[in-house]
Length: 206
Image 1 (tube, one colour):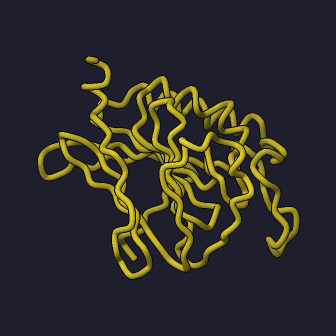
Image 2 (cartoon, one colour; image 1 turned 120 degrees about the vertical axis):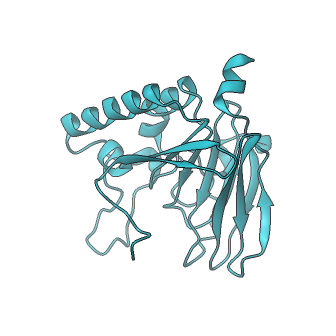
């Protein structure tokens, strides 16, 4: 399908909304950055995010981190959205990813990233820890894992939304006035709308 484009393990592209608002998507390879969660070939046994082994190839991980910072620094888009497989924050089965919290989060904050989108955990979440970035997990496309075993990793008020159903997806609404992340159930019913995020220019001006 021509809709699916995967030119490299990590890459970036920019889209323009009808009103001229621009959003730059920065797609990253979190396995390269944090290590493989799978301990067996069948994928049945997986390590939680705080027990990942770290990058198998340190030089490759460092190269990607440099690319990420260079890309974020050079962006002139109204909004930046970073997306990777492992979540930065999650209350679900795999939980937050320590390596990303240490290495990636400072860059998300520094360059005014609007949202970080992830999968891996088979649930839907919006977490706001107060650092200016919205953390969304949209990982329940084909199944639900109802575990909330990492609920203790964030304060209660930081969890803005949680859902678990066999199916679900999200979309972004991009306008000059703000970027909004919306979550849907498997039937396409809207089940949560996150607060809109102002463009980077307004954040910097404030």
